[in-house]
Image 1 (spheres, helix red, strand yellow):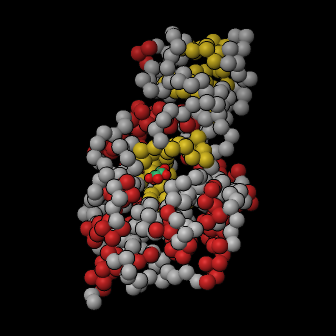
Image 2: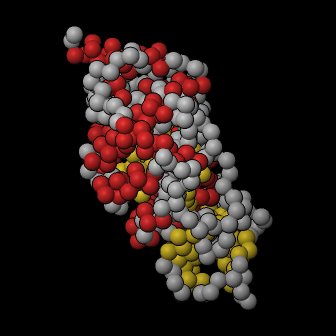
Image 3: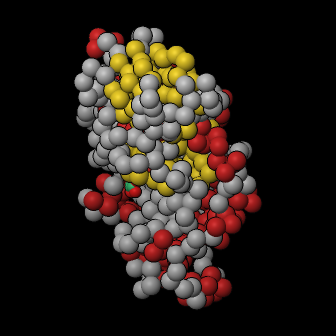
Length: 439
Ligand code: GLC
């Protein structure tokens, strides 16, 4: 049979094993059965603080969800939510030949928005890998399928060329495997899925140069419980020990069942409360879903507000875009990125390379960041003509907004009071720079 036809037939048939190196050995089968039910802490895998510094300086990244699900355009959960059978869904792999895919234009859009890093879906829960994979189950990857392309290779190069850090999203779980839904009842099938996951993580950590972030997702089983609950199955401490050998400094998120180097908070809900201790990342999508769906996009101000609310609480923000089936970022999402970029060019000094404090945030009113002798007060809403802040150790020697507006301030007997003319305030966040005489 012709090579392409054969690959297509394999994609569509559940029986086909042609070209698939995946087979479970007796050893792997018994390893699976002997595991205990405990979550996985493995503190020795955590990066030391100095290796997390760049990530904490970076603050803002762009997430890209892109895969076969861009064709039906119903979001990345379409296969599962709409109960599309694997062999039916796999037909999308024969149709997926994006005409306008250009990793440079994505990376440039992210760079212009002010992003310091990107994270792209190398493989989502539907199981289709967006890279040329030797270990994909039934050759279900963009190297073997109609696209005949390694999208991750292009992406990695484009991001790196622009001086941004490179992140890869990978979902070890795969809806094509009945064993995912019943790992104890169908252990062989589940073990195949696990083997594919290990193989592909190895490939991603070996074939694309230095990877800065490994962003797992879906470390649970049968969509039940937490990622940590499924650690008995995935054995993330083994997987991530291998990852650390291949990429010693890669920053790893907590969704493999291992605690990870940072915490994640998902969705566009408000960010509130005090400064958090462990580094963490807020993640949400500009569009209606993570994967492409036509529809409204968040406005720049809404995104900036969440970014600022995360940063003043020791967080980063990873903001998602969902390119369409042809590889284009939807126009309204692009406009939002441009609006964010315009704001960042003026106010980024109070975001990037800062740390939260010295003031604890007051929900909906203000928060602060600092670097060296400077304190940046992010005023989100003005309680009146002026804003009163808690005492500072040092003496404020000058104050102005990053947009260049004058700031009236007083510092007598402890508390600091600042005010900015109403006409010169920023509708989302007026960033006031207080220069002090003490670090
Ligand atoms: C979720 C979803 C998913 C999305 C992700 C992003 O766990 O399963 O579709 O990719 O989170 O944070």
